[in-house]
Image (cartoon, rainbow, N blue to C red; front, side, top):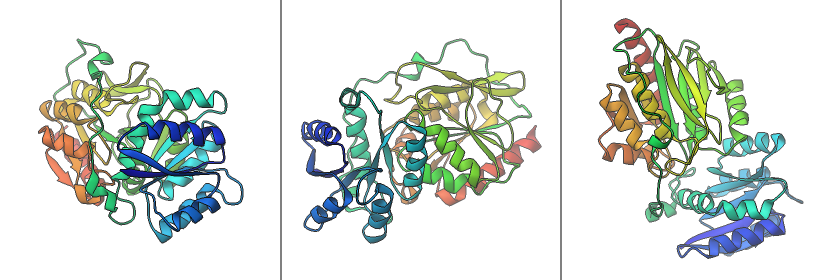
Length: 363
């Protein structure tokens, strides 16, 4: 049983989340309280496996409470944040402080929104329960796969008959996919890259509106430029494009250049944006001109796409288990036979730059 503590000053949120979680046999709510002071009293006698935490609360704000937890006893925390510009900015601060995932909540229609998001909520809790936070979490021994649900494949988004990749182009592209724990992993990689880094396209599983704040935060930390992708953006050296929450991002070839296309469409592998959609489009458009990297995350999104990249001649890399927050997505890619190399996270920046150097010489 995964023990969940809900900390939110909204009675509606506490009620709806408790009802949804309690319907799942493997997850239980050990408490639902209105602020961190009550939470600390509860945690004095029983410690949760996962905390769902609001940010703006009376008596103590969520960020202060989160930092206190991470200092005293690192525990997987899911941020429950409002879909506003301010909410997105503060949520990025929480992710930087160690939160592993986000549950979004609108300002209106809250009850129906949360009820419609039940599957995403349960998936987030399962992923958080096996996450390594600070030190190895005891809950990691209970790692479970997400329950099998019908999945749409990337074929639903990728149209047939696209141009075959050119054997060699002067432009190259690095495609990265990640989920739980990915915000910290991406920051660790991107801050190490110089302005001469090759063009990078990224899918990070994240709700709509939060991706812009995430890209903005990284842009302020990195030598490379980081931005939320816009339709028809060119993939260029020194530029990192983050897929928009709520839209799929695909790579397209335009002559010897590469550009991104943003598309609406169904969830693929339960996600939009989907890593599988990006990776499969990279396989089609770039082939051996691409480097594929799959980082920490729950589930199997990206495994099939990485296999297609590998088969199309791209060099493919998976983050190793020891440095993953959740060794789910990389593991599935390895098991499918689509990974050329398994590497710790701190090796990834050098791999990216070595790829760029080799590709430049080849072209």
